Every structure is written in structure tokens, then in C-alpha cells.
Image (tube, rainbow, N blue to C red; front, side, top):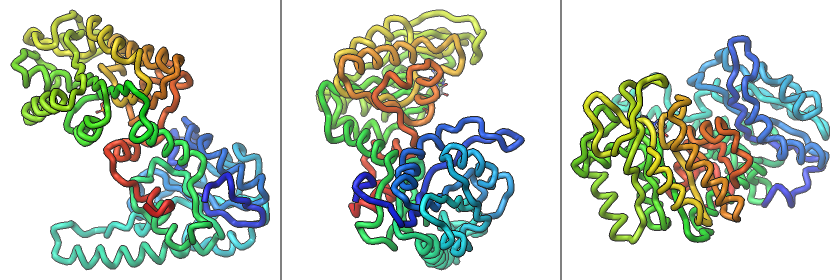
Length: 416
Ligand code: AMP
């Protein structure tokens, strides 16, 4: 079932959203992107004449009540965004009466799901090595099922709109779906958009397809690089991992970031790209600094010939041109991870060149997906988020989806 086709009139919908918004020390929201992201789904339900039971996690309270992570702090902001009064249920596992009292067009916000260890379903206070761990895990899984059943009992329909937690099999993200039939569980609009975006780069590819993988380490990206190797025409590897590749090929990299235990892996990636006919684009020159700081002295040098005491902190001018040349004619583009230490204003040039080329390709009709943690911060820093096709909201979930893994939150609804 899709949310668009469902008429929520007279129905109670329990909606898993990601309201894990950053708060300042006074409990004020500093970035409400996630609340705004869920509004199309929540408003559709209300305007159909349905009532809303909104559930989310916030932070990592580790199965214990902790006022610092109470969702009561965001109740008023949610009410304002929705344009209706919102009641608050201070115990998410004892909200049956509050849910039953909801009338069409009304909304109830449940307290942080993660105040209960059952939400994540991991046994508390016992290490994996403990002989009693397996029994404790089994017991917790049974409790998780009961907790999910309680949540399900509040509503007629379950909607999951929390892409950021879709890679977790938690009570509210996956287990709860088992208590609804196929016609009464569905993805929300935000989830649908994320799923379509991932599908565009994994299955519905228009060529040429260019993936740009940056960031600090090759080790955290290897699963994605391997999955993409069979799909892409151009693979740009940039950022800190440039220097692991340069060293693996015999280069001198000074103090640059390097994973010495991944040198063989780097050579394997180069070999695989050759075997599969993938155009692997690595940085040739770089902007090196004499310290890891914005104000250090800089020089442009070859990425495989960096003087002692210097470290590569951004892609160099020649490299930027090479990257842009690969990106501009592309029809499908994925960008994950910056090309340099973009947090320092003096080392944003490489990432900016990538962002500009993606914007140009998108204007010419390419589908571009930017996602996974720091690339989102980077595109936002450049003010270009609305000039690419899609900026993903899910860090870890997006990366796992691109690795080709099945996300439990989506499988629980689509039955895959
Ligand atoms: P990741 O979380 O793996 O995507 O890495 C993102 C981080 O990589 C950002 O904080 C960047 O500052 C960092 N990064 C990118 N290029 C470099 C580099 N050449 N040296 C050190 N850190 C880098």
C-alpha cells in the first residue's frame, strides 16, 4: 500500500518519524530539518481526517529515562509545524487511553522510544562474551515483540517515515509492522523519496554513471566501493583516502592521512577497476599544508610526492579539472564524502569543484544524489542543496542501502 492511495479518514495512524533533532543546552531546537521532512506525511494523515500517534527516538538514552532526551522538549515545535495542538504521552508503553481518546485531526506525541531497552532490543548490562548473553538476547527479543505489539495496539495503520533508522530492526522501525496486514502498513513520503533515490542509482541507472567517494578512510567505504564497481562508469576516489592509494603505488605522502593496513586493498581496487573497465579517477595533485589547521602554510604538490612534514588536505587544481571533466557529462551521479578537509574554509576548493560540476550536470538533466553524513554538511555549506536532485537524510541507512543491503525498516513493509 502507498500512503498516497490510502484514505486515513476516521483512522488512527501510528507514524515512526525521525525527530532526533539537535537541541541546545536550553532544549531549543537548533536545526528543525527532520521535523520539516516529516510534515508532508503527517499533514496528509491529518487532512484526510485521520488522527496521529507520532513516535520517535532522540539521542542515545540507552534504555533508561533521561530528561535530557525527552521529546516533551519538542512538543510545541511539532504542534506549531503541524498547525494543531499536540498532546504528549509521557510513557510510550502506556499511551492506550491517550491514543483511544484521539479524534480525527488530532495528534499525540509519544515519549522517546529509546527510554525502553525493548526499542533497540539489545540486552542491557551484559557483555557479548558472557555465557548468559544468548539467553538474555532471546528474552529481550521476546520483550521487544511485546513492546511492538503494545505500540501497534494504539492504531489502525502503521506508517514508517524514518529513513535514518531504516537500517535497524527496532521495535518501532520494523517489528511493529508484523502486527499490521499489507494494506495497513506503508512507507511515508520521505521514505518513498529516499527509496526512489537509491533505486535511481542502483537499478534505474542512466549512463554515464559517476560515483564520487571521498571522506577520510577507505576502510569505511569499501563495502560501497565494491558494490558500485559493477555499476559505475567513473569512480572518483578523493579526500583522505587519496594518500592510501598514493602510498600503495609507491608514492611519498609526508604526514598525510593513510591506512597502512589497507595498502593491499587499495591495489586490489585499482586492479578490479581495470578488470571491470571502470574509469578510476584518483587525485594527481593536492593542496598540502604544514599542519592540520585552516591557517597553516600551503603548497600545491603531486599527491605522490608530498614533502616530509606536509600533509595533503585538499584536491589540487589539476585534479579538480579531472574530477569536473568526469562529472559534467554524467547522467547519474552519487556523491558521498568530501574531497578535502572542507570544515576548514581554506580547503574547500576540491569539494566545491565537485559540487559545482554536479550542479552543472544536474541542470543538464542528470540525476544526482548527495548523501551520507559529511557530504550533506558540505553541500549545505556551499548553499547548493537545492541545485542537486536529492540530498539524503539518512547517513548510515543510505550507506547500507548503497552497499546493496536490505534495510529491515523497508523490508518489514514491502515484505522483501
Ligand atoms: P567520512 O566521515 O569518512 O566521510 O570523512 C569525512 C571527513 O573526512 C571530513 O571531516 C573531512 O575533513 C575529512 N577529510 C577529507 N579529506 C581529508 C584529508 N585529505 N585529510 C584529512 N581528512 C580529510
